[in-house]
Image (tube, rainbow, N blue to C red; front, side):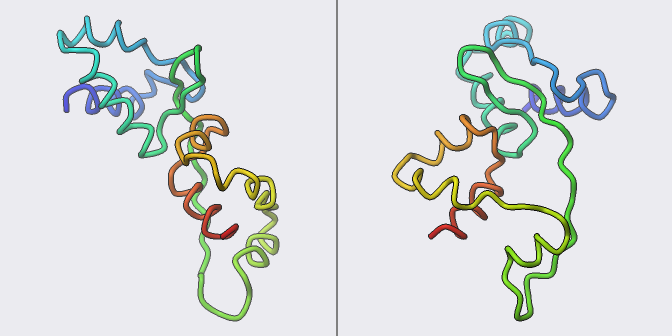
Length: 125
């Protein structure tokens, strides 16, 4: 999709900066001369990739660049222990009460990427 490609290009060229608000669905629909649902679909795909997040009633924003963590998931130590050894502190218990909530609510409300949600949900379950 042209919309995704253009936004990706703006990210790579640093025209869009982390934390910056993206144009609204209506603005993008006017710019690309496409229906708003087409724009929404493109933005949802960018959210699924973890590149943008939504604040309800405010808009969509470019997410801060994710830091890659090198972690081997084999061995006798748990995921939590390995993350703690690397200096990361997990908030697994925070999401235990959310298990009955639809995953989309967690993604939007807590600005999580899909992979983060999958890891957190699998750890809680």
